Length: 362
Image 1: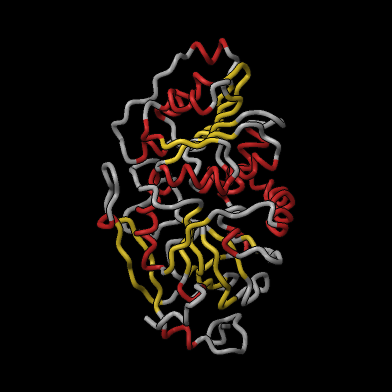
Image 2: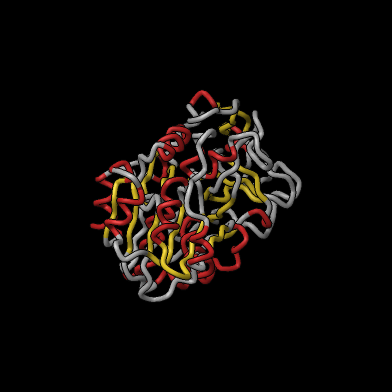
């Protein structure tokens, strides 16, 4: 829809959009430990009107990610109370006041956790449509999740063919992408940890891991020792804690640790840091490096070149758990923190569901 009633608008009426309202999700309290639905509020408002040079986007897909939990705390750059939350989202341009964003175009932006957003061309990434690849892949395998896995393997670990790999939280979005990418890059033995026997079985059956264990089954060092008795070359760490300590002990000379996240501590502010033999870092010439994927956006096209042909051929699959309905966004986030998802968790507007109809007017 266009903006005839506003300066710089086009001929189609903007009026029909004004019959709808927008919803945003706000954080209204700081959690201590595991968050609950009471820490959030859905806030209704008038549909935003984009200023000149911007566009109105109706969001269709939302990403909920582990880093959101860290940002809920009172930390630098964290979420402000009583304000709409940020997050990755895919939407359709429904009204534009800039020639750089065409109505009907699909865009990626970071003003998620809301049904509608006003964006400028500089705040979005126009999404290419690849035949046979669903839009959701731009939030999973082709999005920040996949880019994190790709950067971790190719730039931080510098994975070499035949090297053995251990991945913590391997059944999550980054963990499944890491396993699939590592297999395509020629990794040797792939070992993963997960939060249940069912997830461990999925990793072996579907993702390509050689061995996976439920970290609840015993001390991490013992479980990893059984899964990789000869040791490992690379550890991709999404968890921290006891599993990080176990990996330090299992790494061979010149091993690498790729630090991505510390989900073992997100809901346990009083957690004791992992204890390991720091001499191992020197004696085995180990390297530990963390990174933020936002500093590697220039590799997006390289990720497309690597992943898209393999998605189209079926050599690569996107592991996704899809939840229908914006009203379930908070539930999906809390479920992700409880480990209820396999692969990347994505919230989908009901209009995009196979049996969905038009979103009712609010």
